[in-house]
Figure 1: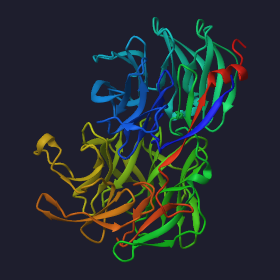
Figure 2: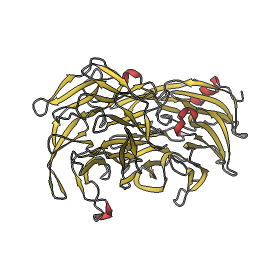
Figure 3: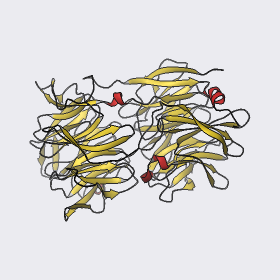
Figure 4: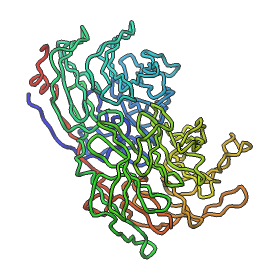
Length: 573
């Protein structure tokens, strides 16, 4: 039987830290993540339309129950399930660190990866209850995307040191009865087993955009022969190596195609409101590139930005006057440096080095970057206080601050402290020009909205976290403060909104939001920055279009994929 491939059009599934699409064991139903905030949608392949699963805002990494009647998913560090027909969301359990994929065993238990400071590989009872640690995290091991093998006696998972990069990961098999582990492949992620009638099937996994297959004996838990590349265009998440594909027991494979470099090309532009609504655009640099996350220096004369090169992202500084780019980081393969932030004096650029912590670099590139806050947890710096003595960042969707001090020309960090503790996704913390307030966005209402709290929070307020004021009224993200007036600017889909505000003692009073720049071309809350004069923004606009990015793309479905594997990678060899 030959392989049958077709490309289906689906809404643009979200790229999180793992697979955002799942296929039922019988190969007849898809579940995928879509929207802002992300929600779960399901579609039977014999039906033309998808339907939303209710109350799944913030969902990530869906997975099916063995009978295909339930969908598991995570919201932050909470593990939930919902019927494929809808209904109430049921809480199954939670993880201490970062949710790193899950798989549902035939006995009803759910195996979950608890990574980045978590406990390791957990087993959660389907009915809820205390988790059991089946592969502990000793401080250097991350567990990613477990896959329970048929019979439920063993499972596949990924272990490795996040600080050493995804190339250091290894695919292991774990025997549940005695906890024994064995390495099956080096440098792979997202392991999946495709069964065959005689018990010798295929282990498939990815390394970057390439899908490999190798013969795997289920009885001995041993691979046979050599891994063979079978696909080379599978999308994956560079920070974790997790791939955006799924397989069914019936041998159907679905995957999201990897984006080409051209799809990520953008142009630098100044954008302002010419008549109060219609945007006026002015090219900033003639040469396009894979640019992201612009941040203007305090004097507005330079731009820190992220430039992507294949699976690598580095921080650069652009000087428009001289039309020159200065490179600050040299990450190498699969190293991601992101989210640059200028220190108030313009001397440093602080940025996230994914899987290694927060780093600082001289803005003139005169020295090597140095660790500011080391951690294998992804930490995203966002804003300094005006005096440069505090830095706000977020990790695991929670907001933290850390005190900073200049010691002999070196920026040093104190001990991080939580600013806000909640069960929601709180991100993008931004200090006001006077340092008294912190704006951020959160999905606590079921969709992202912009909020403001006092800084530091009042210990006498409810929960010791101070008062809270909602600023946006119909979705909002990435708030930024004007330095020239009492206004907040935030991103809302394809437009930028502005909100005036006043302060009455310890009370923050926000006006009604209004559209500042309509038909805004920025692709996300991180692809623009407000100029110091408050009159325009620098933005990275997708090349060749002034419209919002396309909201659909092709997901490739390969039916009879298991038959094709048996032809290309013979079993037992």
